[in-house]
Length: 534
Ligand SMILES: Cc1ncc(COP(=O)(O)O)c(C=O)c1O
Image (cartoon, rainbow, N blue to C red):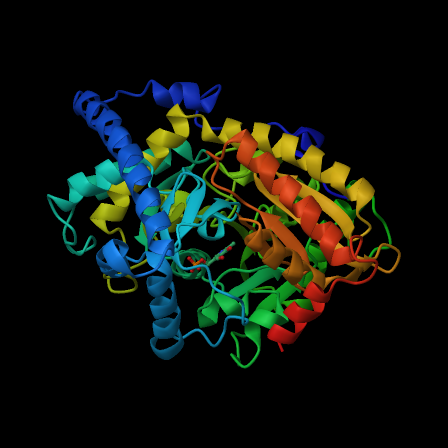
């Protein structure tokens, strides 16, 4: 297995603003007196949430019985709030007619009616272990009571004010907090609404600060769906029919140990060669006018690619030689997911600009582009803004989310649970030929499927079938990778050990069924999935 776990990296965390054991320091930072009241409210609301959930699950079970007799009336109410067989059918039909979804492969949808922690319930009251967290977003768990309480409280004061025209206290508070918890030197934040908007801002800042216009990015990278972010995305599948893209983009190979053009499976050799290729990109693909190098510290959509330990240090040496900025896209790898608050902390380098989104506010839309002060200040009046960026409700949720991360030690939890799960998945690899590689950091885990371990032919249909079988067995997983052959485990970090174990068991069964171990040949399920996806 070419993957690396947290332990295998063994790299000291990046210098983190004069703290030792960062969460200890953070937890001690002057909690305002009003926090005590908030805690009291949270405890109350947690009890309320539990009660509500029990009632809801009972109602959903009743709804499954149909719309006759006494249950019928109940069912109408349930349809109105998204529960019951009719609500399922109505939602699917309305999506078909009114929601643009032609870009989603034809899969049977889960109609999500409710979610909490690491559990999702569909409209029929069916329970799922959520191992995808809404694409790695609800790191603190669905509907964390403290996050909800903070958002509700903010909604009572102001929902929108145009954060850049006027000043809102909670926006200032979150920016201050981000400056405290991110690597040394990153001090000023621009708030946007999505990861892509955050990356666009980072590109804009890099150009404004350096006066240069070119970028170096990685193959297998994913940075968003806008024209600028697709231009630096190294995945043809995401880019087809969207061009022409920005000029001045150079690609270096992703540090993908399991598949690389250098004929080695030694992580350090891959790191060395890939860093050399960054120098090569500057020399042969650029005009010497490179503003920034951009990379995900752990590549997510590209198939959960964990760079070897020395990779970013080697790349940083190249960048420093040429005065090129380093933009770390922590949109997917940030907020505790990899066992550190930010994944770049595993690699011992400090970026010049860091982009955060997804896990930043436990599901409320928000992004943060945080940079060194002099870089942040390089934009001139009129050059940038966002109407909704830094929405006060999202910022309140973001502040509470950080408190939860710190106090519940979620990065530590991710590290512990990730190590354990990686071990269990590696054990599966000894029994399932379909598994070519198991890799990950914390709870950002990929299981790469291949039809042949020798040729490493991607098992894309099989991965889709595994996802479907897992869903049918009550476990939601993701699929990624250039060829769509990597099963992704990225659950909320609060997931319970037993739920994670169940997910691994279900994957075990799904792999057996897909491989045809149980019916003596390639499972008809694989063919069914292939047919449904055209
Ligand atoms: C690493 C990375 N960057 C950027 C984005 C874009 O984020 P958004 O979908 O919020 O625009 C994503 C989304 O998956 C991502 O994984």
